[in-house]
Length: 317
Image 1 (cartoon, rainbow, N blue to C red):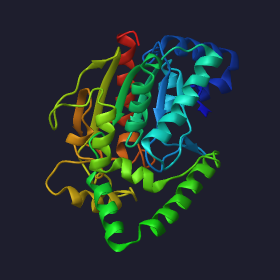
Image 2 (cartoon, helix red, strand yellow):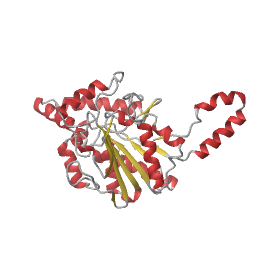
Image 3 (spheres, rainbow, N blue to C red):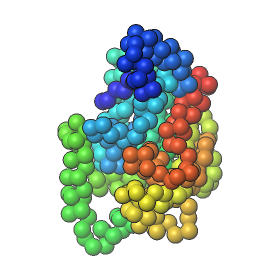
Image 4 (spheres, rainbow, N blue to C red):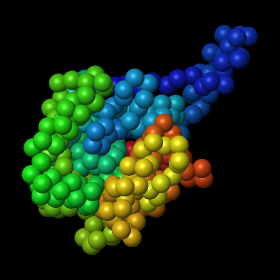
């Protein structure tokens, strides 16, 4: 598990060269004043499929943990399998949150899950609601993904499912190894099954909290004392310099004229109170990847997470 701590603002660098003591005083003063994201409960950032907490200097939620901590938030970035079922990943997250509660006395957490991280955090909220203050899913596969449907159908029709699963499991293992968690189990077929339309429907039957009763509708804003939110983007190709855009451009074709972020449709992302479902982001822009490259005039994902933290702070969460 990776912990993130407040860093001194870069603008103090020049002043420090003149007076280290003055620099320290100013930095402490500014840090004390910046409480914009100082929530009552820690914020937990949960990655999606083929995700990681961090690899070297690169966060999965690129630049988000440090931005939140600078505003006073306590941020937890847990380690879950790069590829596995929603339930296995959910149990991994649950174990880490319970350990934090035992070690630090923290009673509740604000959970944020991206992509497959949506089902991961929803599992924890359903299984142990007393541990959760709020849930936000971003680009969440709450209603399944047509991309997962197509991959499963294609490999099943060609009889290549076992071979493809073995290759993808190896890839997921490399990701977990690079992020410092080589022992995490990988199950790409289980992950794929969880993310299909049928898999998501089955998950929703067992864990229906805040799921909309009608397609593209709003879900319950609060269930078992937990506030539920969702957000997503609907622009696929956003930056010509982003090497991930072509891949999302290809997968986005599967949605036809249905608005999507390239991997998840707008309506599928809905859960609880939908904050906004048409940001000018694709699926990776939603977590400020790759390395912050996005549309020139698109909304700042880091600012979005800061704004949500402030929303939770205002609510006393």
